[in-house]
Length: 115
Length: 115
Image (cartoon, rainbow over all chains, first blue to last red; front, top):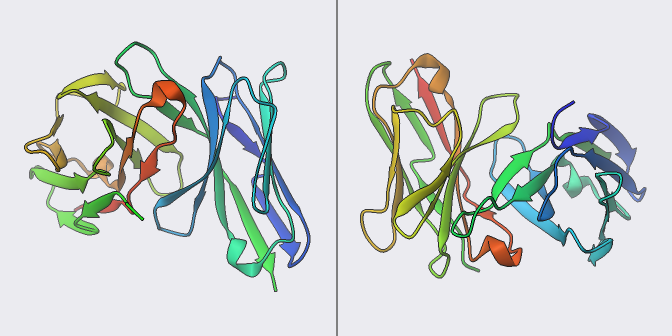
């Protein structure tokens, strides 16, 4: 398997339900970020969790990180039809003193929230 | 809210032609990136740029690709002689200082179609 793999690949739920997406990775990371992409559009940053953090909240989003298992989860509570999109985890590695953070993206989870 | 802007949103070009994709990163950001996403595939890192030079590049970023920051605001990606397989969505991103764990903000992308 590759760095930044999400599961499930596709998730279909009813409005109001919670959606949980998981991500696994292989190498050491500086942080892990979750992004959302509406069909054919740009990537919208949702939340960043640092390697020394275990859980983070932002509105209806809750992210966990388990560095011992090299895995993360994104929970969207009380989902809405407008949450329908692809969700990607991206692991960040900063190779050197003056390097930017190279993000390695997973395949994504396609979330469909039915009204 | 500040955002990364990319132009054009869609470009069609003949195989073998040169293309320049343009980006205006967020003004106080120091690190700039290009990523691409071939239809139906993962988002892939191409290159990161800091202090007027490339800080890291992937194996995809071969001699056909170059980046430039011609002035204080623009950041460009040039593909010298396009191939059919260069058809993809190209995303520009910027971040303040990834070593402090800050997120990367992405533009809406340029869809490049090589015919």
